Image (cartoon, rainbow, N blue to C red; front, side, top):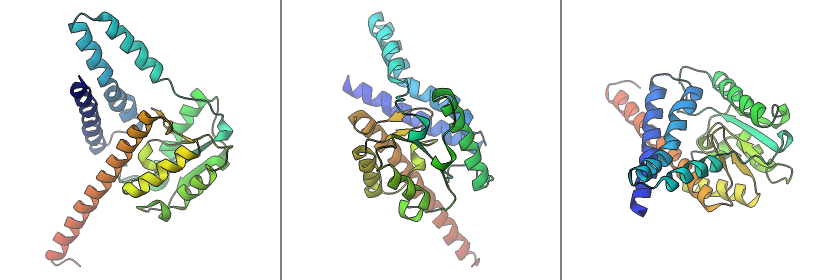
Length: 238
Protein backbone atom coordinates (compact mmCIF):
# COMPACT_ATOMS: atom_id res chain seq x y z
CA UNK A 1 0.00 0.00 0.00
CA UNK A 2 0.97 3.66 -0.29
CA UNK A 3 1.19 3.99 3.50
CA UNK A 4 3.46 0.95 3.71
CA UNK A 5 5.76 2.37 1.02
CA UNK A 6 6.01 5.69 2.85
CA UNK A 7 6.78 3.94 6.13
CA UNK A 8 9.58 1.95 4.47
CA UNK A 9 11.16 5.12 3.05
CA UNK A 10 10.85 7.08 6.32
CA UNK A 11 12.12 4.12 8.34
CA UNK A 12 15.20 3.82 6.12
CA UNK A 13 15.96 7.53 6.53
CA UNK A 14 15.64 7.30 10.30
CA UNK A 15 17.84 4.20 10.46
CA UNK A 16 20.59 5.78 8.36
CA UNK A 17 20.51 9.10 10.26
CA UNK A 18 20.63 7.44 13.67
CA UNK A 19 23.36 4.98 12.74
CA UNK A 20 25.45 7.71 11.07
CA UNK A 21 25.20 9.93 14.15
CA UNK A 22 26.31 7.08 16.41
CA UNK A 23 29.19 6.22 14.06
CA UNK A 24 30.42 9.83 14.04
CA UNK A 25 30.28 10.01 17.83
CA UNK A 26 32.44 6.88 17.91
CA UNK A 27 34.94 8.56 15.59
CA UNK A 28 34.39 6.27 12.60
CA UNK A 29 35.53 7.56 9.21
CA UNK A 30 33.23 8.91 6.47
CA UNK A 31 34.42 6.12 4.19
CA UNK A 32 33.44 3.38 6.65
CA UNK A 33 30.04 5.02 7.24
CA UNK A 34 29.41 5.15 3.51
CA UNK A 35 30.49 1.59 2.83
CA UNK A 36 28.45 0.09 5.65
CA UNK A 37 25.69 2.18 7.20
CA UNK A 38 24.64 4.31 4.23
CA UNK A 39 25.00 1.44 1.76
CA UNK A 40 22.96 -0.86 3.98
CA UNK A 41 20.37 1.77 4.83
CA UNK A 42 19.66 2.69 1.23
CA UNK A 43 19.04 -1.00 0.52
CA UNK A 44 16.47 -1.43 3.30
CA UNK A 45 13.41 -0.52 1.14
CA UNK A 46 14.41 -3.10 -1.51
CA UNK A 47 15.09 -5.70 1.18
CA UNK A 48 11.73 -5.13 2.87
CA UNK A 49 9.89 -5.29 -0.46
CA UNK A 50 11.64 -8.52 -1.52
CA UNK A 51 11.06 -10.22 1.85
CA UNK A 52 7.37 -9.26 1.81
CA UNK A 53 6.97 -10.50 -1.76
CA UNK A 54 8.66 -13.82 -0.92
CA UNK A 55 6.46 -14.32 2.16
CA UNK A 56 3.36 -13.76 0.00
CA UNK A 57 4.70 -16.27 -2.55
CA UNK A 58 5.25 -13.65 -5.27
CA UNK A 59 8.77 -14.52 -6.48
CA UNK A 60 8.32 -12.48 -9.65
CA UNK A 61 8.00 -9.27 -7.65
CA UNK A 62 11.04 -10.15 -5.53
CA UNK A 63 13.21 -10.88 -8.60
CA UNK A 64 11.96 -7.81 -10.46
CA UNK A 65 12.68 -5.65 -7.43
CA UNK A 66 16.29 -6.88 -7.25
CA UNK A 67 16.91 -6.32 -10.96
CA UNK A 68 15.17 -2.95 -11.03
CA UNK A 69 16.89 -1.55 -7.95
CA UNK A 70 20.32 -2.56 -9.25
CA UNK A 71 19.65 -0.93 -12.61
CA UNK A 72 18.41 2.22 -10.85
CA UNK A 73 21.50 2.38 -8.64
CA UNK A 74 23.92 2.32 -11.59
CA UNK A 75 25.57 5.78 -11.51
CA UNK A 76 24.30 8.20 -14.15
CA UNK A 77 27.73 8.89 -15.63
CA UNK A 78 27.44 10.77 -18.89
CA UNK A 79 30.23 13.26 -18.34
CA UNK A 80 34.02 13.37 -18.55
CA UNK A 81 36.65 14.52 -16.05
CA UNK A 82 36.92 17.95 -17.67
CA UNK A 83 33.16 18.46 -17.36
CA UNK A 84 33.05 17.98 -13.57
CA UNK A 85 33.65 20.41 -10.71
CA UNK A 86 34.68 19.00 -7.33
CA UNK A 87 33.54 20.88 -4.23
CA UNK A 88 35.01 20.17 -0.78
CA UNK A 89 33.81 21.66 2.51
CA UNK A 90 34.06 20.80 6.20
CA UNK A 91 30.83 20.77 8.19
CA UNK A 92 29.77 20.46 11.83
CA UNK A 93 29.08 16.76 11.32
CA UNK A 94 32.79 16.07 10.71
CA UNK A 95 35.24 14.96 13.39
CA UNK A 96 35.88 18.14 15.46
CA UNK A 97 39.42 17.00 16.27
CA UNK A 98 40.42 17.26 12.59
CA UNK A 99 41.49 20.50 10.93
CA UNK A 100 39.75 21.85 7.84
CA UNK A 101 42.73 20.77 5.76
CA UNK A 102 42.63 17.21 7.12
CA UNK A 103 38.88 16.83 6.50
CA UNK A 104 39.16 18.15 2.95
CA UNK A 105 42.12 15.87 2.23
CA UNK A 106 40.14 12.83 3.47
CA UNK A 107 37.16 13.73 1.33
CA UNK A 108 39.35 14.42 -1.68
CA UNK A 109 40.80 10.90 -1.43
CA UNK A 110 37.29 9.42 -1.39
CA UNK A 111 36.29 11.40 -4.48
CA UNK A 112 39.57 10.65 -6.27
CA UNK A 113 38.98 6.93 -5.78
CA UNK A 114 35.46 7.30 -7.19
CA UNK A 115 36.54 9.23 -10.29
CA UNK A 116 39.43 6.82 -10.94
CA UNK A 117 37.00 3.90 -10.78
CA UNK A 118 34.19 5.44 -12.84
CA UNK A 119 35.90 8.05 -15.02
CA UNK A 120 39.38 6.62 -15.39
CA UNK A 121 41.31 9.39 -13.67
CA UNK A 122 41.20 12.40 -11.37
CA UNK A 123 39.43 15.72 -11.81
CA UNK A 124 41.83 18.46 -13.02
CA UNK A 125 43.19 20.63 -10.22
CA UNK A 126 41.65 23.79 -11.70
CA UNK A 127 38.22 22.16 -11.33
CA UNK A 128 38.62 21.46 -7.59
CA UNK A 129 37.28 23.95 -5.06
CA UNK A 130 38.29 23.66 -1.40
CA UNK A 131 36.11 25.78 0.89
CA UNK A 132 38.27 26.93 3.78
CA UNK A 133 35.96 29.77 4.84
CA UNK A 134 33.23 28.90 7.33
CA UNK A 135 29.76 30.34 6.76
CA UNK A 136 26.16 29.36 7.37
CA UNK A 137 24.92 30.71 4.03
CA UNK A 138 26.23 30.36 0.49
CA UNK A 139 26.91 34.09 0.14
CA UNK A 140 29.51 33.78 2.91
CA UNK A 141 31.43 31.05 1.06
CA UNK A 142 33.44 32.17 -2.00
CA UNK A 143 34.12 28.60 -3.13
CA UNK A 144 30.48 27.65 -3.66
CA UNK A 145 29.74 31.00 -5.30
CA UNK A 146 32.45 30.32 -7.86
CA UNK A 147 31.08 26.83 -8.46
CA UNK A 148 27.57 28.22 -9.02
CA UNK A 149 28.90 30.75 -11.52
CA UNK A 150 30.79 28.06 -13.43
CA UNK A 151 27.83 25.67 -13.79
CA UNK A 152 26.14 28.29 -15.95
CA UNK A 153 28.61 27.23 -18.65
CA UNK A 154 27.35 24.42 -20.93
CA UNK A 155 30.82 22.85 -20.62
CA UNK A 156 30.12 21.83 -17.00
CA UNK A 157 27.88 18.77 -16.66
CA UNK A 158 28.17 17.85 -12.95
CA UNK A 159 29.35 18.88 -9.49
CA UNK A 160 30.90 16.14 -7.36
CA UNK A 161 30.59 16.25 -3.55
CA UNK A 162 31.00 13.74 -0.72
CA UNK A 163 27.35 14.32 0.20
CA UNK A 164 24.70 16.83 -0.97
CA UNK A 165 24.65 18.74 2.33
CA UNK A 166 28.16 20.02 1.59
CA UNK A 167 26.56 22.37 -0.94
CA UNK A 168 24.30 24.09 1.58
CA UNK A 169 22.67 23.76 4.96
CA UNK A 170 20.78 26.98 4.49
CA UNK A 171 17.07 27.64 4.93
CA UNK A 172 14.29 26.67 2.56
CA UNK A 173 14.75 29.76 0.41
CA UNK A 174 18.46 29.10 -0.14
CA UNK A 175 17.82 25.40 -0.82
CA UNK A 176 15.23 26.36 -3.44
CA UNK A 177 17.59 28.78 -5.20
CA UNK A 178 20.37 26.21 -5.29
CA UNK A 179 18.17 23.44 -6.64
CA UNK A 180 16.62 25.63 -9.33
CA UNK A 181 20.05 26.72 -10.53
CA UNK A 182 21.18 23.10 -10.90
CA UNK A 183 17.91 22.17 -12.61
CA UNK A 184 17.85 24.99 -15.15
CA UNK A 185 21.53 24.63 -16.03
CA UNK A 186 21.03 20.85 -16.47
CA UNK A 187 23.86 20.19 -14.02
CA UNK A 188 23.99 16.90 -12.14
CA UNK A 189 24.90 16.62 -8.46
CA UNK A 190 27.12 13.56 -8.11
CA UNK A 191 28.14 11.76 -4.92
CA UNK A 192 29.93 8.42 -4.45
CA UNK A 193 26.55 6.87 -3.56
CA UNK A 194 24.06 8.56 -5.88
CA UNK A 195 23.72 11.02 -8.74
CA UNK A 196 20.86 13.55 -8.73
CA UNK A 197 19.31 14.87 -11.94
CA UNK A 198 16.96 17.63 -10.80
CA UNK A 199 14.96 17.47 -14.01
CA UNK A 200 13.62 14.21 -12.57
CA UNK A 201 10.84 14.69 -10.00
CA UNK A 202 11.98 11.75 -7.85
CA UNK A 203 15.55 13.07 -7.68
CA UNK A 204 14.26 16.56 -6.91
CA UNK A 205 12.22 15.32 -3.94
CA UNK A 206 15.05 13.11 -2.67
CA UNK A 207 17.61 15.93 -2.78
CA UNK A 208 15.25 18.45 -1.20
CA UNK A 209 14.59 16.01 1.65
CA UNK A 210 18.35 15.48 2.11
CA UNK A 211 19.16 19.21 2.16
CA UNK A 212 16.33 20.01 4.58
CA UNK A 213 17.67 17.38 6.97
CA UNK A 214 20.99 19.22 6.85
CA UNK A 215 19.32 22.52 7.70
CA UNK A 216 17.41 20.90 10.58
CA UNK A 217 20.70 19.54 11.96
CA UNK A 218 22.32 22.98 11.68
CA UNK A 219 19.47 24.72 13.48
CA UNK A 220 19.50 22.09 16.24
CA UNK A 221 23.28 22.48 16.67
CA UNK A 222 22.90 26.26 16.94
CA UNK A 223 20.28 25.88 19.67
CA UNK A 224 22.54 23.54 21.65
CA UNK A 225 25.50 25.91 21.34
CA UNK A 226 23.37 28.88 22.37
CA UNK A 227 22.13 27.04 25.46
CA UNK A 228 25.74 26.31 26.36
CA UNK A 229 26.67 29.98 26.04
CA UNK A 230 23.74 31.09 28.19
CA UNK A 231 24.65 28.52 30.85
CA UNK A 232 28.24 29.69 30.83
CA UNK A 233 27.18 33.32 31.25
CA UNK A 234 24.82 32.41 34.10
CA UNK A 235 27.77 30.80 35.85
CA UNK A 236 29.78 34.00 35.61
CA UNK A 237 31.90 33.14 32.57
CA UNK A 238 32.03 36.05 30.12
